[in-house]
Image (cartoon, rainbow, N blue to C red; front, side):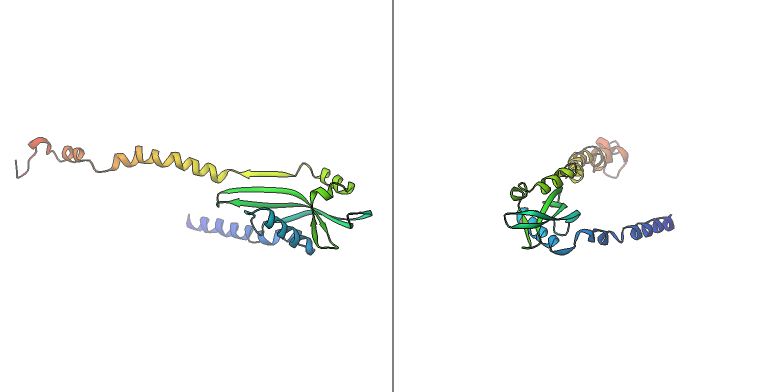
Length: 179
């Protein structure tokens, strides 16, 4: 039993040892740092290091819009964590100007047709997803702990009556030296 448990744990460690290196895909260039900094400013509960950028695309614009001639776009996946309990996964389209090294606001990107088309292409992926597993576990414990005290612990606590009945000393009927 112990050997099979140790073997299973070894396999799990080997499988999950490279998870940190798999997220290195979206960390190329200055876009990652700029998006990371912007998200930290926008979300006070931003989980640093959770950002991944996917579907990166660079577009050269024919006509500059607000001094933007090159636009880099990506789908950003990141997490926010509130009170170490409430985890929320966010997916957004982010726009970056590689010439200035700054993030382009959505209001400005909405004026660029190629940016609007890019956002429409990945519309299905965008949004927020609250992970409720931790909350459900806590709610389950709120119900389970009082039930444990009511049905298990209460039966096992010391009772004078049960002691007297087990030792046949109820109302002086038992055989002891004082009766």
